[in-house]
Image: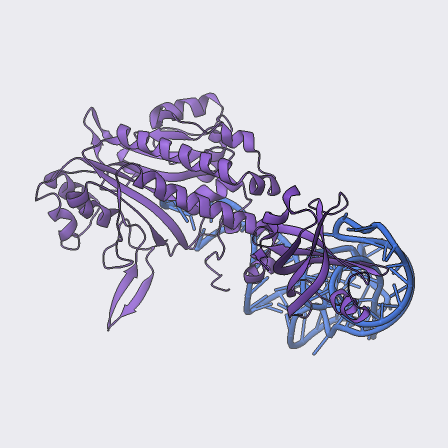
Length: 431
RNA sequence: GCCGUUGUAGCUUAGCUGGUAGAGCACUCGGCUGUUAACCGAGCGGUCGUCGGUUCGAAUCCGACCAGCGGCGCCA
């Protein structure tokens, strides 16, 4: 007797054969002396039939009495049946119940908050199972893409003592009588690795203590970052657009069933092909004015503005050459116009907005020190970062991608909380 | 930090200008030999977020508090 998965038995080769399955009760209903159990495992669902034809009265009663999410193992014969949800039915000959549980807390008509409180149970739903499978593809594809292009994966520290950007958004953690912070970006550490490995990437958690209450913010999120020696802003974007194309194509290839279950427009995703349009910030402002948006040079792009802009595109776009005042100190000024910097944001279509930010880093020591002074940063805190500009400095570029934001867009979910199994937000640390 | 909202059964909710609560789901029992979030009948289940006020009478009006949610800023 061989244990099989539900997906394996849903085909003609299994007709008339005896199979053994194990899983959980997804639905159960009785009709007279027949009981239909829809069994769920990680691969799919199938209808089981319990009747007194092949079971004793007592066995049939016990099976009929099962509850949603009870766990069991069944052995029976596979039949074709157009009336069953997935086209096949297994008539139960024998079974073993592992647990008959009490009423499962999740039924129909569910509120968003209730589902978040019960996320540990909601993970079992077909919808969230689809989300988890697609996330798995996204994370694998990101890694595969960079391994396939000669990058090394590195592991930066999570507990750090220097801020990357401002200072107000750090999570403080007690540390043997001192205090450290949880990392909010691994960029600076990644920069240290390029001097030995040249092309590096990492996927690690980042933490932001901002009191954000929006549909696109998490306090803990999965940050995919890369840093590359010897390349500039444009070359970096060429890598990124191919990476996004690769990830989306892998999801389309491997998760068509899950995308359908979630109601995602697959043709839209098939159209996500490099190259993506590059638009200079200054030009974007002019375009925005042409569309009647209230934006002028020097304004930062808020969520509303990004949404209003992105209705005009059906692929992601790069926004480049932001004014210096809008970005942090480490960005490389454009030699042709030092008031603008060699950087880029990648905005996702369908109203999703920024999912990636990157650019060329300042690699000249004097220039970096000057920019840090302008930002009132103490160079002593950054001694190791500045050392990189003292010993064999090279031009380099990098980016940070919010993998949860990417998943949020690919899945086309309402909020980013629906794209991550255990969202951490300002007021939620459980489950 | 700012703006806006909401608390009624385990869950989703109705309850209008005040007359002390109604439904669906879940669960239990019964019916049905082909169900598809089955259906039909019955049952179980509520100090209406908390405290105070107005009133003969408050889920409903007023006040305070508590908790939650949505959006913005910030960013990925």
